[in-house]
Image (tube, rainbow, N blue to C red; front, top):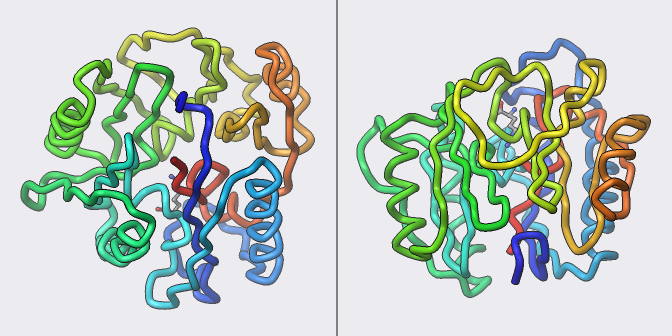
Length: 259
Ligand code: CIR
């Protein structure tokens, strides 16, 4: 399957404790609304033909619905990460049973305490895999992940990317096909990217985190600049309200593992 076609997903219901997750924002989350937005996100995936497994909430792990950070899936192999934030370390092991039941082969990132990776820093774009070096993903973690990915698929072009200004690489850029990324101008890049970037106006920068699958793109509603960019590559814009996840520094890619 191409990198933008997906048949299966794992999502996880936000726990009632989600407001005690990590955030740089000050607005308080409404968990009831967050769950409604999450249900809508899941039903939009299903409408696009994805078979979604929704795992129950885990109250002991307030950020655990951001499943993207705890595993990376490529070619039916799930690589369990070691998330950069100490409060999130247990999330990868907690996902293991669901990934195994889904028939995926499981590989651990391995290495010591310095080998850290958040899946939010790993962007698949055609044959390229960009691994961002962030405050969550270390050089050692990124290098281990690169080696594992190349063992799974030696034809990948895996690059380590230096950046700053945003939480994860995918808070700064996401792939919308056609060798094109959407970019958040709040991100400063000190590495060259092997793809074109459509830079959004700064007031829409947060909306650079989109999710492209099966011909459609999930994006923050009321961002006409994003809608225009999506249409320019011939995809269908699917606007959604994700206000409550934004309050926790989350967005679209972080809420699912897709393959
Ligand atoms: C965190 O700071 O770890 C969570 N509150 C948000 C993680 C969002 N993950 C992502 O965008 N990949």
